[in-house]
Each structure stands twice: as structure tokens, then as C-alpha cells.
Image (tube, rainbow, N blue to C red; front, side, top):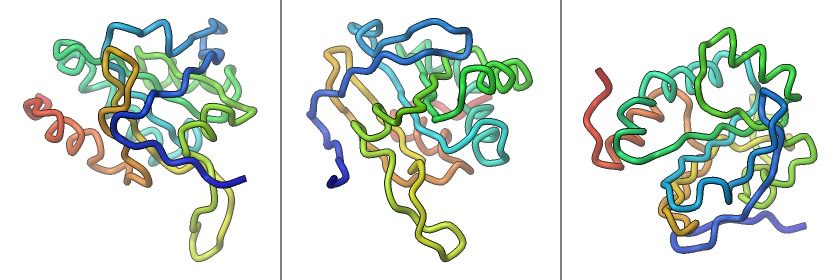
Length: 160
């Protein structure tokens, strides 16, 4: 199966996934709002924790600018619940164990891991407009400094 890549202007694929609290969450629930959807490899790992905490710390200004944030991984809801509680995360963390959203967004595929080719989550971020279209598709991002670069790209001030 060829890997998907989304581009600016594409319709963002809808998804309905279970969140860390056991609630079903759909992208369609956010229609009329701007949404940042980010895919990360695994909860409670160093890079993913850094990225999630950066989003947490920027959530106020992102929300003030009209953005909601959603994180998606293949982790089970129970692991996501622990991650959310431990790191005081206040945005939805969605579980995608079947990789349906990962594949629809092109966030799953072959990647290099310490010189080995493996299949896994490609750390990716998508900015989706109020009409459900892709404004930005960022693939293979680095966790360190990603949210700061994203804020700059969106024209938002640096986090306090």
C-alpha cells in the first residue's frame, strides 16, 4: 500500500477515535474551529513527553488564536490516561491502535531508527482550517523546538 501524503488544500481525513478518558472524539466535532493534529510515536517517552508538554505550555495562546490541539498515538487509552495525568495535559490524546488515522494522514510508514529501517509513527503535525482543509502538513518533525517553530510559522508570539 503506497504511503499517503497530504498537501495544503486537501480535505483533512475524518477520524473517530477513543480518547484518554474513554470518550469517542471525531475531527468533525471541531468543524468551524482551527485544529492542530499531531501524531507522536509513544506516550511517556522523552521526545513525546517534551512535545506534549510544549503543546500544554502553549495551549493558552494557541486557544486564544483559535486553535484546538489533538494528539494521536497508537497507545492504548489507559496508557494515554496515565500520560495525561502525569504531565497535566489538558487536550485530547487519542488512541489509534488500528493505525487508521495514522495511515490516512501519512503518519505511519518506514523510517530510520538508529540506522535500521522500521515501520512506525512519523512524528507529524497538521494544521486544519475551520472548513476541514489542510493549511499545513509537516512530516518527520523533530520534537525539540517543534512547538516554538510552529508558533512562529503561525505568526504567534513566543511562549511566556
